[in-house]
Length: 508
Image (tube, rainbow, N blue to C red):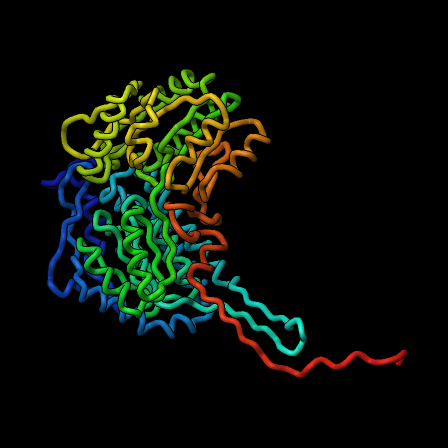
């Protein structure tokens, strides 16, 4: 059923109005929804139209510190909660998110733009982090052993790191939230969450669910703001927080690391990417094209894991480009709420402008447009699915994240050549390789400088896997068994005991 039939002056269908009306729009501090101290609000816009959906509280530094103090006050109660209690909270939240998947997906589409089917997929993905970390809450381990000399016992325990600051991006507004909140709760940490100002509604709805399932007051707090730096810096430098988890640009991540250094905060960061997607001439081209579509077009290309540089070996470059262009040209662009749409709008005007500039730069340097290549004038921040061939390695898009539905193709000759091209970047989040040669697969996986590698698959994200990059793409891992380790401190206790008895003499 189509959901974009206008029913009010802004063109919003009745169901969308109901979903928006149900979302809290304040700050969540110490277990209660409240306005910003200043009373200020800011609008959340629909990227398909540029129109205001709703206004939410615009926090200032005072609000941020109140939220952090609430997290600090609740630290002991949360840390002392049992693993079974944390499991129950997370599983109750998992059930609630799953039951409300349709309304949460619509909310996400309204504020972020992705098609409803893709939004439903993200809600399912987000819920899985809650379920995964519910299990991890029951598997926090310690250790016990004797010292080599035998006169001391070593007790090793893992304890919650303490109040955490969680900063989430706009492109996956719910899944990036549960990927951080899940392990924080599982470990027994309290938190202050700051969602991106473009997409705060999904997080506000999620926090309301966490409130409903009975988490202690102050264990989860949320501040929405258009003044992120001004609000976050005092919290980072206060000494009350003990951990920062950030997903966003490398530029902002570096600034946050400088601030965290003052109080030596634990940090985990998922930063920018510049993913190479490599197709060798022995690859299954049908699989490779399908993988490229998944790696490039997930979330309209607005993902740090998106294929940013597509390298195709010379023997199959022309055929691969033709097939990819056919698939891209067949995609339907429009509002994410419209039935049949597979490509929604970009997040804002700045994003649309940047994608256009990167394409124009590549064309000036000799790239050829197989499909797309120019934004249609009109309402909303849309850009057509685009395939470029003969893209120069000197093009801006070879060094910058495109963050849009543009697939730039460059041909290569040898394995050594493409490895040099792929690794010639300060980023190292993920790489993709398509080949049927097992030896080559292993060589590439070992030599590609990235924290993750997709071998003959275009999607690597999974709640049970350790997500993260190397070089300037980040620190630490999210998801998998390692994800909860980021929220735990290791404490060693040396226990004095009786000295070992001397070995008996003789035959006894």
